[in-house]
Length: 450
Image (cartoon, rainbow, N blue to C red):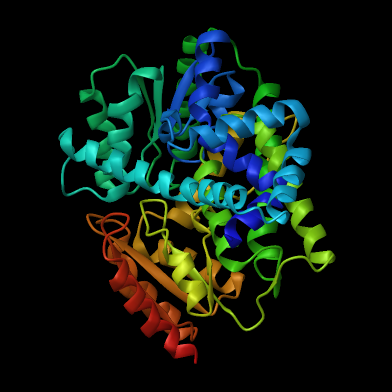
């Protein structure tokens, strides 16, 4: 019997969030063709202007069809009839009957979800390479290019921000080579907050907003922006509750590997909020309530004595089996990239302020105090969050082909050492490669705590 399946089926909100992530193809088709909504490809969790303009942001892999469709189709039909809470109760009841064929089917479907997502990412990576993306780029860029080759024709625009990574900026330029009619909307962020940088960014955001209005044919008011900022701030508040309050507890509402997979799901789905910010807010709010209730009732797993290990960065690609290996070794994996990069900070705004300028300040804060224009600032951000999370160690994920983040490990290691936080680095090229090497490296690292 799959522990992951047991945990997932006992959490209505987690199952619903996973379902919304995986059924993006059908949801987005309905939005595009029946409701005539405009689809906008986004990568970073900065979809607020898109939502405010009435368009639909989409992290492009969610336009793919995942091969667990029979289970998902059945799940969707049941929930349409009985609702999500009754569906999870029903599936949980079936598992408790301990009927072998039913249990095997449910367990296999849940396990297949994880494998299918990973396989799809690798397919997009292969497609990116086959389509001519530079082999010098990292896994994340290669797979993103493949996603746009595969489904880029379905979006009306590619909405991107420039960042400190030169390879990334070359990648968004390369999107022009893909044969589709998607408009390229790029927001150039000045590298440092000096002089009139805030004014420049505010102007660039205003231009991007006008481009989105031209695409949707709808005007975006200041109140539309403020309403979206309020939704985002609430989502980030709940997200932080999970990463700080719940993850720091010695009693989890599930087993540690399931919790790590939840953090991974949050990281992937937060990028576009599963294309529906209000629904996402409802899901993550309910998820927090469910987790607190389970902990209060003593339903879950005692994780006392399991070392808390921050694994980062993961947004450019990482080995998903790491969390399961960590659990076998007596540790618990923590993923928290969006907090490290400053994207979970609150957008400060008021009814009397200019919301575009408020948004520009929020982005400047992330870029200058978290992401950084230099390795000193970036490593300070890693260190700050590691200390705030009170982790026992840090696993730094060095991506092949990453020339802007992976090369900062030595500096980070020295800073962690001064704080007496153990660390090690794992090399990553593609999901599923070198899993045995990962086991060996993690095994040696975890021996430090024994």
